[in-house]
Length: 109
Image (cartoon, rainbow, N blue to C red; front, side, top):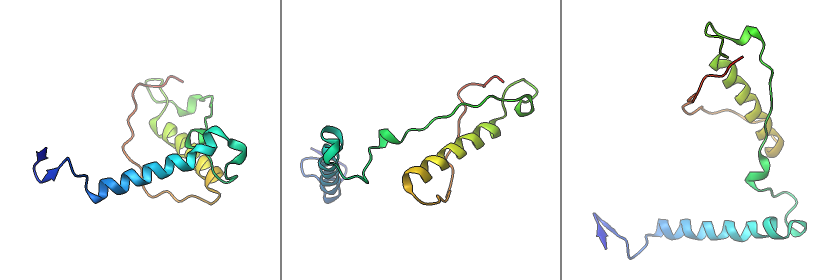
């Protein structure tokens, strides 16, 4: 099968490298998933790094519609991400950039 210049029957070197890396990640994760006591003590699964917090919003962080300011929510999200990166990275994190932020629905005070 040919699509443009790609031959889908013969994987490219890039695809072979991605496949090799994915297989190596699965091999490395096996002890963490099935035999945690034998795993590297410095290794941790991404799903184990989840953090959350709860904040009671005060009236001063609301806008005229009685909803919480988006900037307040973004600040709280940044602080939580910073704490998570510091906790699991072991070093003071540096923020390089922020991707698009979309608020799905307003948040009541």
